[in-house]
Length: 143
Image 1 (cartoon, rainbow, N blue to C red):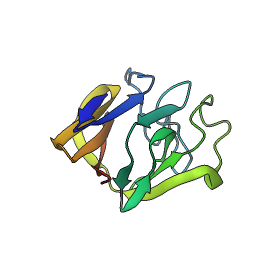
Image 2 (spheres, helix red, strand yellow):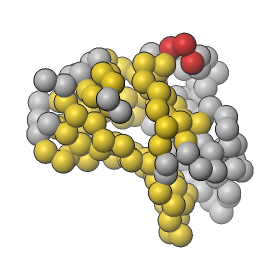
Image 3 (tube, rainbow, N blue to C red):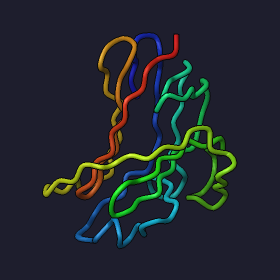
Image 4 (cartoon, rainbow, N blue to C red):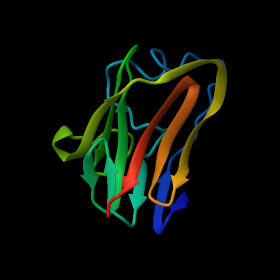
């Protein structure tokens, strides 16, 4: 969690380990919805409206899902934040959905980690890293 200006942004997730496994394209299949964590769906909560990918995310609590692929991934921020895995995921509940190209590294991030990074009092980035993959996207606090 982090404070960006007067916005409190909180991400709650389970942090599985790599443990010498192939994660993306193995444990987590390509081109399938993933709850972006283990067990319960990862969720994001904000007390201020955010702008992500040019769209408004109203203040509230949301599920965070992805569709990993060999190239461009899809990120979905969904109304249904309280669910086991992706069992109840429904695309019609997506508030924001966008494509993102991950960065790849030769170094392994052993445990899944999310970070909310402050750029200034009005903007920041949200990142997720696990195995050799890192996703990062900017957001701004809506005025």
